[in-house]
Length: 97
Image (spheres, rainbow, N blue to C red):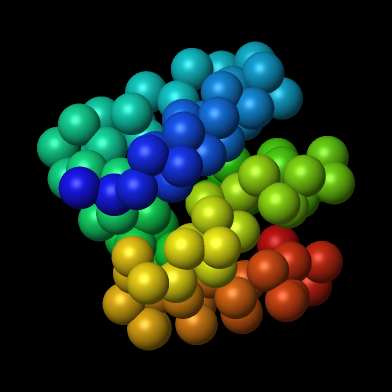
């Protein structure tokens, strides 16, 4: 079970994305139901495809609200390669399409 703070941050990030985009995060919410928060964030961070939510939050100057930022804030909850992928994405956010 992830720490309560992580759970709250993930839920807040989803809500922020939904407000920013005007869309319900159906696919992400379904992934979390099936795989849980840690596995869902891990899969998304390691996916070569840049997620729409990351782009939306980056473009609104809200990188600290992304799943990648949450992963970096809770490195002990994730595998090293997931934390590294999340950090890389944050470090290169402005260069990613």
